[in-house]
Image (cartoon, rainbow, N blue to C red):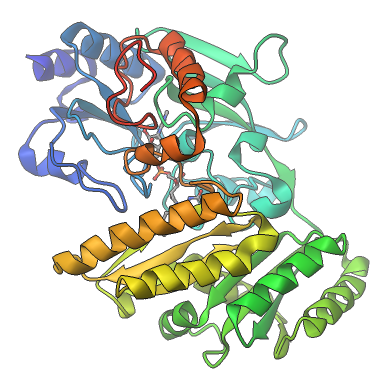
Length: 460
Ligand SMILES: Cc1cc2nc3c(=O)[nH]c(=O)nc-3n(C[C@H](O)[C@H](O)[C@H](O)COP(=O)(O)OP(=O)(O)OC[C@H]3O[C@@H](n4cnc5c(N)ncnc54)[C@H](O)[C@@H]3O)c2cc1C
């Protein structure tokens, strides 16, 4: 019996098998698995992880690595059963190297917790998914997470400099971006737990900027806000964040956070710029002139840290705030070239309306990364079908506009059919060969990334 072997290896307190415990690990922030895992294990060390993988391999049980389960595409969901490995107990900052601006972290450390713990050094960890108060660095590495500030700082892969990984046999290997040879770190980041299990990571830290300014421009509609984004970037200015919220989202956010967002605007553009204090007034004047020329109705500069925090709390809490206007939401995560955002948003509105679904938009506009939130009631089967159909149409539209099927949330289980829309059979076969080198029996997070039907040795 696998549970007994697991208990023997890592202790009874680290193994869960009661159905009510297993049920908690059968879903992420959107997807619910039809099957429960056979066990949930909470390792406390790399050695535990290796022992668990060896037992699972001997028993023929797949392993699904899990951070905080905030993923939105079923990546951490045990769709085919198996063992869920939760990193809730491996959640520490292991080493801080201020002189080299690096930290070694365990995978279960919460993203925001890292920046909080090192704040006194004047350093911070830049990738900031809107879920950063709860998502883990292991999950962020698994999905190559982005976030509002990734426009100028880059996404997770740009900030991971080395990994410690347990492979599918239970052996430990390390990778380092500074070493010669293949860039295994680049291959592993974003591999969604399918190539190995990350047990620690060295991440790059940045110096906190001398000055941070946050401005809010209101627009009559979301299209003019998008045009302003392209105009700012096209002028050669790269703010640290360019985020848009439309009127549907603004209403919900303001009701929840009281941050002073204008609820009568068609859309707002939240702009953040960071740098030297004496550059900031000139930067504000430049950006303000651009947004005015693009039809901005008003301009507001956050005067204090508390105001800046309130505006960001509203933006980062936008998805949760929609609970005020609908029982459920589905976040589509798609990308288009930034200049095609207005067309993409018109198409989103058309598709949602055609299927009788309300939609709100909150997104990383600077990156061309849309997040239409389809608002519905999952008890109504007609609405559920409408969300699925509208979601598929939006996916196809974004591809037609030169974009792709995921900006940052990953492929997971939900979007694997979509891989056929953007990759040829040969492309997928090349990826499958990489996977088979790391995990020939496909025991690490099966039924993820690759389209259904892909078996060991077959690309599709
Ligand atoms: C309200 C909300 C806002 C969000 N905003 C953003 C955003 O701005 N940007 C963004 O990118 N995402 C966002 N997300 C999606 C989600 O938070 C990210 O995908 C995040 O990186 C998932 O982290 P997690 O710890 O919850 O990982 P999980 O959901 O538990 O896992 C995610 C993937 O990583 C793998 N994984 C986890 N740990 C390991 C490990 N140790 N080794 C190998 N693989 C591992 C899992 O198997 C899975 O495939 C948001 C989600 C919500 C609910």
